[in-house]
Length: 125
Image 1 (cartoon, rainbow, N blue to C red):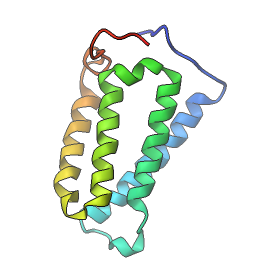
Image 2: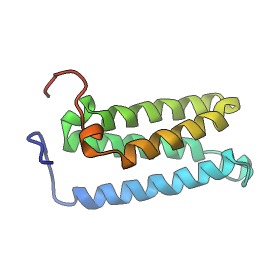
Image 3: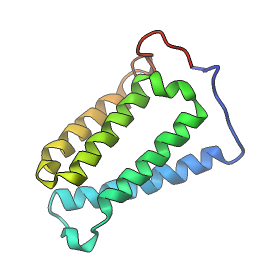
């Protein structure tokens, strides 16, 4: 699916790969804390690392394709970042929110592109 609002720069793809890799590492570390496999004291900033890396991935995706802001995938990512912020602020909600985010991510990752890239409303950016 080709989008008319795509912008690019040399190295953007590799920057995206690096940021997504860093995000995945942070997610694994924070997940280990949430699931009590690792004491939080060993990595007290894991949640912040997930949030920062996730925001950077989202911003790069948004810069690359501004319409991402009004599409299901872009808004889904924003919702996951908001839930992550709640997880950081309210540790007692971490486990249920973790599983909600895992399930939500699975749906959006494996859904057809017509669903992920569906525009909410008729707004064009």
